[in-house]
Length: 160
Image 1: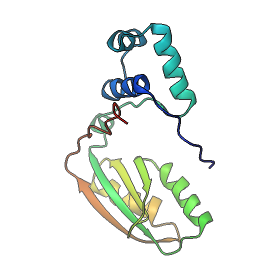
Image 2 (image 1 turned 30 degrees about the horizontal axis):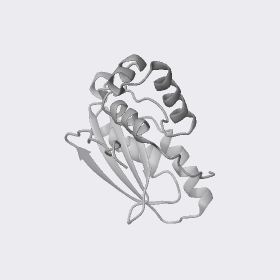
Image 3 (image 1 turned 180 degrees about the horizontal axis):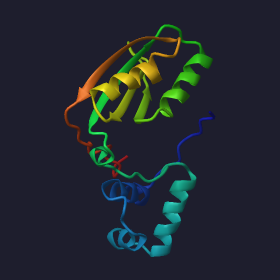
Image 4 (image 1 turned 120 degrees about the vertical axis):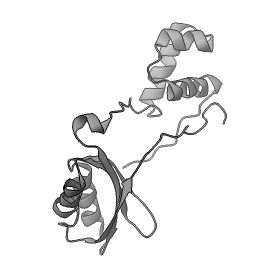
C-alpha cells in the first residue's frame, strides 16, 4: 500500500468535515447555508475531499438485534507466527467471516481484535472454532462480551 502525504485542509474543509461528522446526511444545500458559501463551492470542496481520500465513504448503522444477532463480542487473537503472508491471509479471512463488524490489526500482546455480532453464545463459540482457531498461526483467543456500546464524538476536526 502506497502512503501519500495527507492534503492540507483549510478552515472551510475542516468545517465541512466537522458538520458531516456530526450529521453525514446533511445535503449540499444545508452544508452551504451553514458554512455561508455557494452550493457549487461546497460541492467542489466535498468532491475534492473524496478524491484526496479524506472522506472515504458513508456509514450505515444497523441494530444487529433486528438481524437476529443480538450478542456482540470482542475476540482478541494472538498469533504464534508473524510472517507477512500468514498475517495477511488471516486478516483477509477474518474480515470476510460472517458476523465480523470490524477487524483491527493491533500492536501489543494481541495481534487482532474482532468485533462480532452473533445470535447467541453457541454461535459465538462456533464462530471462534470455525473461523478463528482453524488457522494454524492462531495461538490463543480471548472473548469479551459487549454489554453496551456507544459511539464517541470522534476527533474534533474544526481546528488544526
